[in-house]
Length: 121
Image 1 (tube, one colour):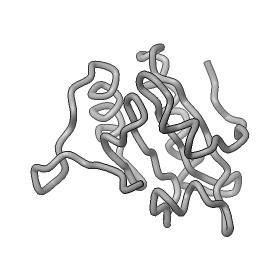
Image 2 (spheres, rainbow, N blue to C red):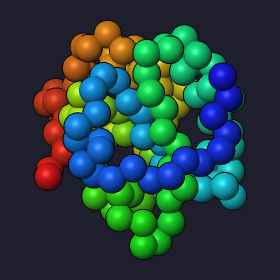
Image 3 (cartoon, rainbow, N blue to C red):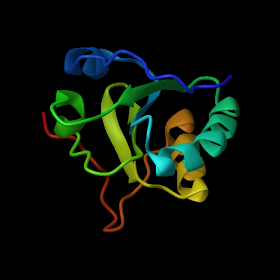
Image 4 (cartoon, rainbow, N blue to C red):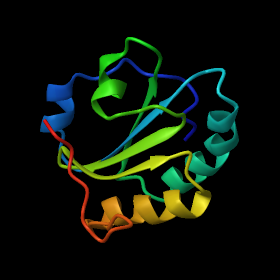
């Protein structure tokens, strides 16, 4: 399945209530980094059909991206049951593969300092 169009931005409440694994993909139509990652992300997502993928057109004044601290594109926010497990900024294919496997299996990934990530509400 291809995920090349952007979807309506969900509310914070919708994300907090969401069940299961989700990837929020923040990017922009003109972002070359986003376009470079897209075929790899599509292929990896096809290996994990249980993961819901929400692609969000981000720009100045978009509140959801700001609450997740998005400053560069693409930024992938990996969530499970409404909780942030990991955030990837301009990730490598290996980082995406590892992150998707973690949220699909329910195995919480660690940050560089060894602590799990949590989003402030």
